[in-house]
Length: 398
Image 1 (cartoon, helix red, strand yellow):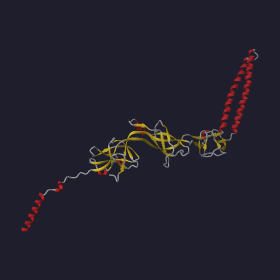
Image 2: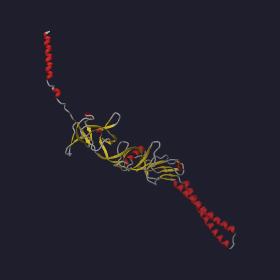
Image 3: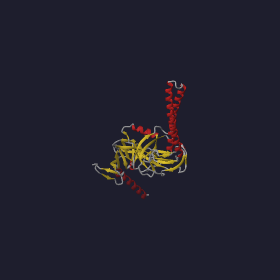
């Protein structure tokens, strides 16, 4: 029993002694750590509001070649797919029957002119004899009526001759405009039908092209509302064209017109831009993409994309450092992305300190050590020096 009592006494004595010693661990004050993060100063800059649309190429001028008179095609005087000039001869229809009709109409006109001369002399003679009662009044009236009929016949035969001349000229099918002609649907010795019932060829003007594309009426209303805001000015009419292979067309076009009504089926408005086509690269039906500068925002806020985050619901937000160096979460509204930046519509103001690096180490309310940076041409964040004359690349961020 005595050893047990002795051991218990030692344990009580040790407990009393330890309770009297100061708690060195708990007496030390906790060390407050401040996380270094990078930020940029929000500023305004000029931003061109460009609209990208898709469409297909159409010719500025096109023509359908249709015979106006029937007959046997004697010659085809062009090479399919070649360039033709306005007024050049494309087809020659056998003119024999039309030449004969022209000669007949001409002979009838000459005969009518001879009859007119005879009727005129008779009318004058009877008019003189009537004064001396050498002829009756009835005979004088009949002679005058015959003269008037002969005059009317002249006009009738002149019209017939003009019609015959037109039909004879129609045997030569010429090009109404300059352009590149397509495939011919008839060959020499084929019979062509008159009027617009037969399409024998088609050609387009390739030197200058108008590209048709569509823009929704909703986008037009959005642009008009934007133009009413301060700092927004109208853009230029230049249009940049991207071809089907992704290459950019070497010539810039000009926006020419906008349809005055909205297509009820598509809810869009048709726009047209004209492009020069000296090398014949643009062809009808070609699929292309365009970029049009419709407005310029002189007070736009553009920030690096890495400074904007999105929640699970898709809402955008940013971290801003306040005057006490505390992190604030702020909802923002983005308009569009431009290269590696976001265009901000609301949520950020000029001179705000936007956190761009180190967000994973902090949370709203955290105190941070802010380091001013800026984005270089390569899209990298570099530390801005106090003299603001040179910059040093951040190694591995913060």
